[in-house]
Length: 270
Image 1 (cartoon, rainbow, N blue to C red):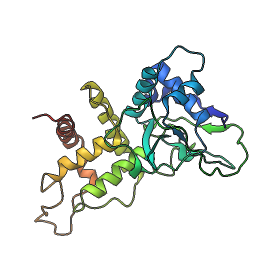
Image 2 (image 1 turned 90 degrees about the horizontal axis):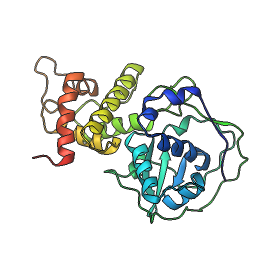
Image 3 (image 1 turned 45 degrees about the vertical axis):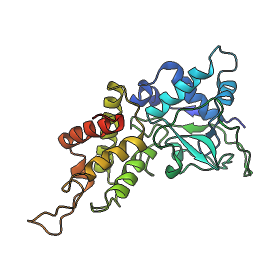
């Protein structure tokens, strides 16, 4: 069942949105109406075309391209559940919905496509499953703010981790076990992670390489793991209790160097 959603003015000035083509922006807004109350939708090009562009001469390949465009800018992520494909609108967790209903399997980062997959015309139909009962919300807000990766965030932009920030932290903890694990995400650290995500998207776009959080950050931390000091295997002789940490690995100069290496690794450069 389609839902009423509202848009805040700040949405239009979000850098993530401005990096998308006008038609892709319209598709993104249309998805809100047809996603379930967890921000999930079946990854079916035919269904999406029929729902959002029923009277427009837009072919399936164009829909696929726009979905990939939204994904490359961190606005949606693709995931699979029970051998069926779905998409999830990032930042959706901050919506205020009194009595939500859920039609599709829940999105979990570990089920997301990695590396980035291309949407296929033959994507499976929507999974019916068991729908929870509830009343349709009125004027649920898809709120926009200026924080990359948190377009649908709450009024204060805080609260739970955005999907992209969560992926950065999760891949860091999983790939670099000898470094200090991230347990607390203070505002300063969160701001730094959002800034480097923005830079990574920009550089990947300039180099003609598709950016997805899972693929990029796995490659980035893997590059760090190849260096004993960056990976935390080489101890500090002047401080035996010190451990390598995410803040050091994301310092501006170091990030630029490792990012180039990570993109090269993803592209298979010699």
